[in-house]
Length: 174
Image (cartoon, rainbow, N blue to C red):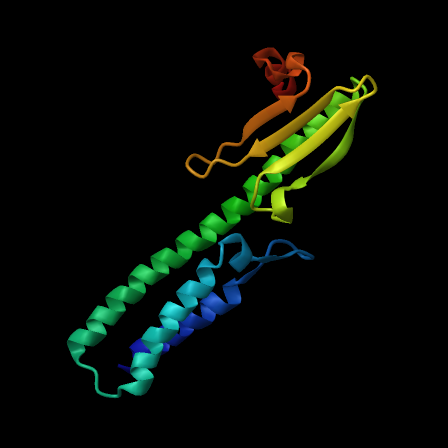
């Protein structure tokens, strides 16, 4: 009984401390943000289990076994949340890097950036860049995230059809 209570409490503490992950010496990452609040939800679930022990001092052995099984599943879920959070951080940076590469390439063709950033200022979202050149051609590029396969997709819109063909997209991606 007491070892189960202790294990639940330690796991609850681990979730709390994992909400912020030290990415490097100076960078602290908010895992809860990157996991879309999944850590808060998991923490509440674990707290509810912990509260059962606090409220009810009489728990059967079968109930304890069931709780231990649930905790094992929650630990797997926790590891999955942390992995997904780290993946989201890396994929966000990749979207940004792709956009920077495209901007650099188009500056050689006298395009300049009008606006850029993450959609809704949310780093978990798509990244966009709006460019213009001296003769008035506009290009909007969105580096979309794909949840299913973690591959970024480039979408190009322009007032000049020349910039919307496959050859131009291939040129940008080289």
